[in-house]
Image 1 (cartoon, rainbow, N blue to C red):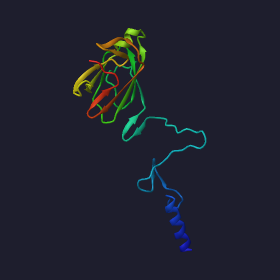
Image 2: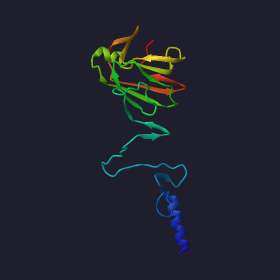
Image 3: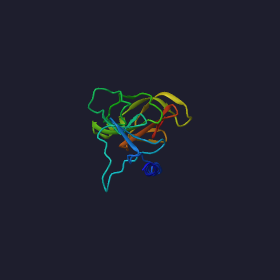
Image 4: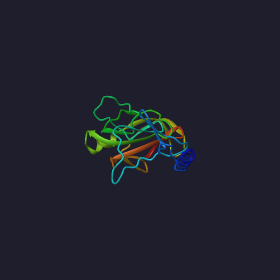
Length: 178
């Protein structure tokens, strides 16, 4: 019987499982692999989805959480949320320096709905890379929802989504104009 048990243990080891038939350990609210350097895959059966009911944290950073900034009194944008709804025409938004790999998305929602107001929505961002020369600027007043012409920012809004990524010590904007 010992030889048979040893054979089953050997088979379980080859399959990436412990003697209970699982390579997953669930302790409290933590799911972990019982083997080193193995992946954990969440795979629903059939056409099911994997759903997350609140903020998703990847590598210590919260991703894909929405913050409504258009009806609050605070103009400092949270670094803990990745999607910010901004008020059209608001010029007092600020975004502090982030952490490496952090991504921020901005959408315009609420506030004054005129085209000129959307174009005037401004975020003053700390620690921004100038794409012309690679220098890092202490601050930059970014109008994320307008297009860029050869002489600077256009007066017409042409965007509903803007993104910036913090990498190599500075925010890198998807639309930058001096």
